[in-house]
Amino acid sequence: MNDKYLIFFDIDGTILDNDEQVVPDSAIRSIRLLRERGHQCMICTGRCRDIWPKEILDIGFDGVVGGCGTHIIYHDKELLHATLPQELQREIADDLVKYHIDGVLEGSAHSYFHHEPWMPEVVGFFKAPRPKRDLGKSVSPEFEAGRIEFLDAEVLDFDKMALWFDETGDMAGFRKKYEDRFDFIERDPTFYEIVPKGYSKATGIQFMCDYLNVPREKTIGFGDSTNDLPMLQIVGVSVAMGDGNPAIFPEVDYVTDAVLADGIEKALVHFGLLG
Image (cartoon, rainbow, N blue to C red; front, side, top):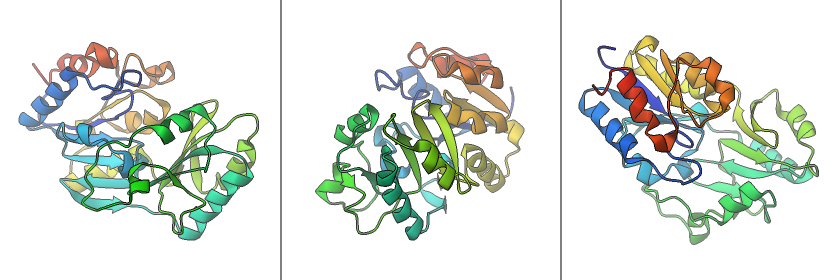
């Protein structure tokens, strides 16, 4: 492979191991070497800016396609940020109570929860310390703890949703009401990532290709999950992590090793970008 590439990396399950919550040294080393050699590296994540981990940003990236394409930053310049109408945000928050659905309403500066989350994944997120971040603004201790209850917030400010549900919830009813305005990405049978229609990791990548005048055949994408499929289907070269969701393997050009088995570095060596 020759010339310079625009390379996109998912965070969870790709750069960051899901179980150990660590980034392998080989990934850090590889990304920094890519940039030294003139390639551009960007994060491409479903996470909204509120939970972009500072320790991962500090690896050194040219920018971030965040929130599944709803928020794009390039060299510290905000190029795009799609927001939801306040009335719609409040309606969604009320309906999560009505339909008894748990989850996180994800935004640029804050994340919002039920008063008492009950799904284990949400409870863990609710109780976990917030990732270190530097957004250039002060926040209240409650916001810094990541425990804003959306029914208590006078003004909501979120871009997308990650929702979990069990047999007590009516996800079918919630989905029927909102599926004309949002895409529902099934991450597992009780977990949906929900993104405003017209936005995806693919639209974010196309935006950056247009902005930088980079042809899509000069792009590479690394991912591990079903929410990465739009990214993996639009890039010139697609790579799946070996410990990712097997459902995406038939859709990619190359399946590399697991995150902690130096999967990113091995794929870059395979394609001749580190040799």
